[in-house]
Image (cartoon, rainbow over all chains, first blue to last red; front, side, top):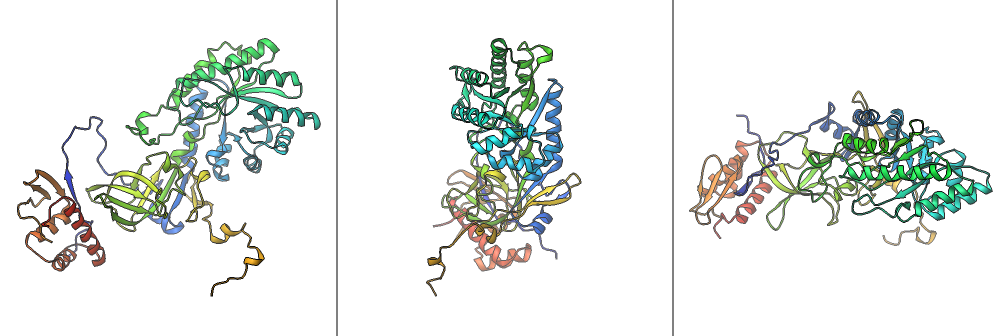
Length: 453
Length: 80
């Protein structure tokens, strides 16, 4: 007689309470394939855990966002935010789609050049630019976004010394009605700092002021804040025109559009609460189009959207290592995915789905990572079918920030796979090895010989 | 390790404790194990019966049975 399918025995207390009027889905979603590729096969071939990035989804996201903005505003340019995901393969997909590069450090700048981005299509942001980096960016005719007065004075000095005329913008911070106010970057609009910076740039005669930039926050759920930001940048542009006869060529509204991940502490899932990119586009376009620019001087709108374009193109596949009952009776499951790889587990309640069919029973469980560290928690509470050792799971929407902010800590970082448009897998970053990890280490001679035998 | 005598159970996994008024639901394997407990079967006998019926390795079953007992104890369904 054929034996029945096994799942571990559980018993759950039945609680009566208020009916969930929002009707949260109770059916267990199983994701066994990613764009036709079997999760089990991918793990078998490339190891676990495994990051998988969908090229098709990146292109779909980009083309959608581009269409949404270009149908509302005539001059739009996206610049790929390198810090969100600077794997060369990922950057190149964005560049193929027409994105410029937006970088915030010297090595990101070099990466952009290495990815074939012409210097004049690289936006150099951030508070940390060395003199050498500024000279290189100026020589390459890149767009240098000045963050503070020390940088402004340094740039004026090197421009004079090396007879350069860099194209610059200033980063402007402002009150857009949101909390926390991001005032640590750039020059403040309300207290006149931004105007002082503009005046200094123009009077120096050594820099060419071509744009105005702001970046009002991250994971912004309030579209109106972008309308305020666009209006204030437009007002500053008008003031520059009125006082110096100079029409700025572009307004860079930065990034900050959210993905549909669910922020920790949110009552409702991100899919229900996050504004669509159409709503952001409406607000921004209306603000600039209504700001009174002459038609021939309408500025180019630059967007440095990162997270919203790549988050849902990334998946992290993993494997169950063990199940454990905690002292208070709660169930817990240990995965081979830790917060060292899934950094965004600190920010989001990531959607996690099993990769194989299970029974109809589910259990509230804590998902732990494999690290011998108390903070290694992937989900503090999630309802999942009864997983067993060796089962696979898929963590969704991990394309943004994980592959740049991850940490080499306790375990080695895994392979990253790109599924191309035909769903063919390509390793785009190899799993780390001990040799790779130790390649930069040096042992002083007096410690070279082992003293234990 | 005995199941409390006054606990009412059904074949479909519904468990009711008239002492506390609490209701519980268990999956099919849990229901089978509870039935074994009610028949005063030993742990070894339960392992034999369940592994004959279900596709499971004995080590896995032993581990899961231990966990199931922890759950029953947590829910106050076992005699002290």
